[in-house]
Amino acid sequence: MIDKVTWVRVESGRVLAARSHGKTVWYLPGGKREPGESDLAALTREVAEELSVSIDPATVHHFGTVEAPAHGQAGVVRMACYTAEYRGTLAASAEVAELAWLGPGDRGQLSAAGALVFDELHRRGELTG
Image (cartoon, rainbow, N blue to C red; front, top):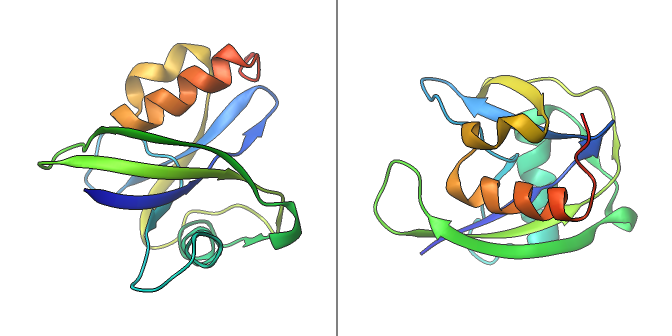
């Protein structure tokens, strides 16, 4: 089991996604917890490392948890997903090749776990563009 936390950020009907160097699939921003790290600590650290912004801890809300086959490796990924406001300007860090705002027609570009979150956003009417 690959245990991750992710940030679900929707603006103007599109969800924020990141693509790592050398990869073709898009992921929701976030990553693996370090030993003993809480979800909030992992989320704020990963988002800062990947996107160069600060999560506002007072606005963090659990969106849901999904499980799906891991992309490009054996096993299953479990993603605890959170929404939150942020401070700063979004920018891809050295870990991330590029950022994109994905809309309803872009589901097939996401990892399997990301696609499950995408489906829930669509069901809630949050994806419009």
